[in-house]
Image: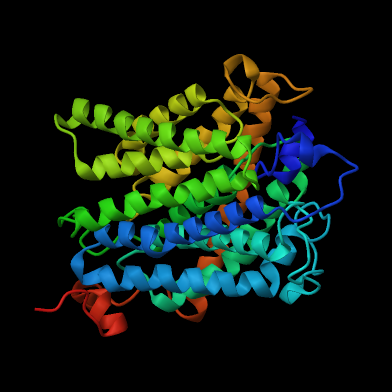
Length: 432
């Protein structure tokens, strides 16, 4: 596998298939690849609605359940709408360093007969749909940092700005052949583009919003761990489309990403529970569910590049370290990141992104890269992380400031105490 090819297509799209690398093969729709990508798209949508919505909803207090569910649903819908208008074009059109082009605005020129220029065996509409689901869940992840005190309108304003100026350039730079792809950065399914990107935005948002009223003085416990567990399991199931679907075809790389998604996630659960048991004296369901998400996040950038042993190590480290990410690091940062978006997605995303540069090498079970040493690839990975942190942080701060100046960021203290379900939406999640 050539390093530049794997980086340019970013998602790991067909990254080791000799059939795809053949230069003289005429593009033709493959029904098997198309069926797998359609299935993967549905699985990624499942991750957001209902997976992420239930995961976050269970973590909220009961008086804020409706608000969290609606924010996830609305952000998902908004981003898929914007994706069709200009998002796909700016992410995957043209050959710019940071942004694509306006060639595909409103999906101009794409028809049922158009074959994807990125994936030569599936219809363009299928690739557009798959990537829309990725974009939507990325922005929806940020909701978890802002929950229980943010205005609904502020979430919408933030989402438009951050999606346009942070998600789209990151997607293009990593997966669309832009700056980071040219540098050789490896990100199979979204360690930088999705998880670090969203984690940093959530951290900035938590600082700008300030802590929830009563935070540190009152108990802020999940109101329904059953929902959180169901949400985590739906995320795990959907993540097979996320990771294995990022192979872009029903091939061996999809199989590698598939098994890595199983073993890394299991290792994340066990890593979290072991550390939690040592620290607190007992394991918890919330810890197990969080460890699963940490393992999933950690393996995302590595899924199609590393072997199963590398995936296990990445997953276990992600689960173990994220225990500190949601406790010691959170206290150190003195921030109220409501559902630990940075502590899990940001921290595990960084671990996975950097360690991809280690375990990609054949001597450690990976698929290999050409013309670069392990130290060199790790440095490339670190640079991609730093670019993500800076871009996402700056854009997120500007987006929140614009929302503050236009619609305001926080609900009133009385409204927050009563709960956003009633005060913002006039509904209750549970009725007597």
